[in-house]
Image (tube, rainbow, N blue to C red; front, side):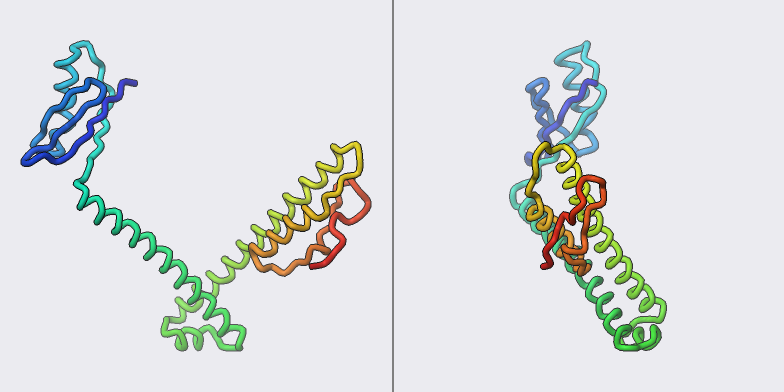
Length: 199
């Protein structure tokens, strides 16, 4: 596939277009004209050239680029803040439910509709289940890896401390509260618990 690139930047009233594949510059009055101008330039330089695609790279002036980068950064921060706020609202709804409030009273307390209160409770439950599933998956993978290590080893392997650390990470990931002593291997590799000490 024959691809040509157009590096475009504003130059007075026109767009200056540098085509590195032919090492030549052309001009365009608008961005819409860039691709046809590039194609014309390439054919002039090499009549037998086959042009499958022209990829335009617009280079903004430094001042505009700085503002655009700042805007993108603020947008990312806004998205993160929105996600955090949604999680906190869901946590607030769950706390009210644990305090004995009905879904309708939760909605009135938080200033949202009955339907929205129900959604917040559902969101909190889904986030909890997702985090717990992720933690159990990490623990399961740790156990499987440890079992494989025992089966492959020709001599005793001291891996309890390493495995305990992996499960600690899984526990911290979700706050699910399972202790390391509750995780025992049952893969036919050993008759003893892989982890024998509680946190």
